[in-house]
Length: 228
Image 1: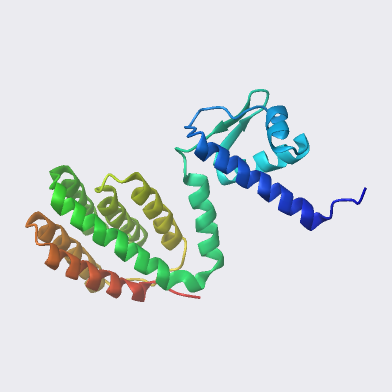
Image 2: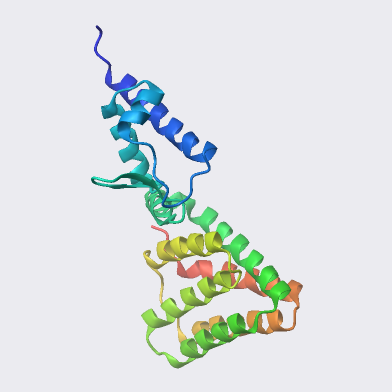
C-alpha cells in the first residue's frame, strides 16, 4: 500500500474537519451538546480514529468545540473569542490592513449611532457622558487614550449586539497595542469636545449631525496612529 503523503494527509484532515463542521450545522447542535464518540465518528466518515482526533483538535483550536478529557468533544458556539483572537493575530501580521480596520470601525460606530437614536436608551448616554467626564479630569496621557477607546467601545455596546461588541473589543485591542503620537492639551480638548457633540446630537436625535461629527472625528484621529 502506498504511504499517504503529507499533503494528502493534510487534505484528508481538512475534509474531516469540514465534515464535522457541517455535521454540527445540520444537527443544529448548541453549546454544551456532545458530539458522537471518536469511534462512532470514525465509522460514520470511514476514516481512522487518529484522523478524527486530528480534526477534533483542529476544531478545538478555532474555538468551535471544547474537548474534555475522559468526557468527549462538546460544541462551543457561544464563545467566539478564540476565533476573534485569530483575527486579531492576522491583523497584527498585516499592518497594511490599517485603513480597512479604520473603515470597519467607522461602519460599526455609524451603525451604533443609528441604533442608539432608534432605541433612545438613556443609560447608555449617561455612561458615555461619565467617560467624557473622566477624560476631562485626567492629566495622564495613557489614561486619556484608554478613556478614548472606552468611549468608542461603549458607543458600540449600546447597540446590545454581542457580535458588534466582541468585534469592537478586538479592534480596540488592536489599536491600543500600536504606537500613538502624543496629544497636546488643545488636541485633547478637541477630542473631548467632539465626543460631547456626538452625544448631544444623539440626544437630540439628529442622526445626520451625529454621523457627520463622528466621520470628522475618526478622520482626524488617524493622525495619532503611527504606522510603522
